[in-house]
Image 1 (tube, rainbow, N blue to C red):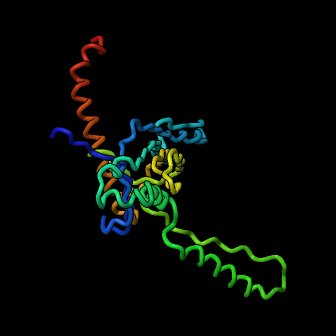
Image 2 (cartoon, rainbow, N blue to C red):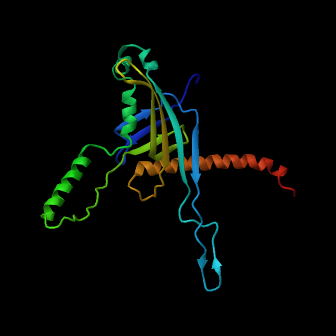
Image 3 (cartoon, rainbow, N blue to C red):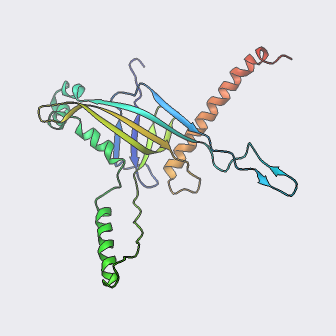
Length: 233
């Protein structure tokens, strides 16, 4: 189809089923590049035996991890030029709503977590009864971060954790709302086991690995044709 363009996106989801989607950020302009880093774990130390120290250079207890960085750009110019209801939000807030949705993906959901921590502090102080100035250490409640899928075309649908986010607000309107922003996002692909409670993330990871395996097989078919040029016998 002429003019058809897939857009990358970050999708926040919850539960075992993809819906309703609590948050979604579609890249207004697809990033021009995607820098990927595959970190290979260090092989285990040699194992001491009665005969000799033996090592397994090809053995590992953990698989490689993948992380990448994308730079997303947002501008209110496109929506402002459309007029009507589409341009109403950027006229009032600029592109603040898109950036707010993006930032929401790195914070625990809801304000209740902060209130819970304060309540635990108060209860702990009351139980101390003021007899000892040294307060017992209390475990900090764990907070659930949003579950995120990074979608980049048909073959990459990956469960990720947002490691970093650098927001550069470049232009503003008369009310100092940002109207042009560049966001550098650092992402880490999650390693999920089949027993993970994150069924959607595991399914996405399995799908993407299968797509990569299929492409590797296609490359093998091409490599066979070139084998005669590299094998001398």
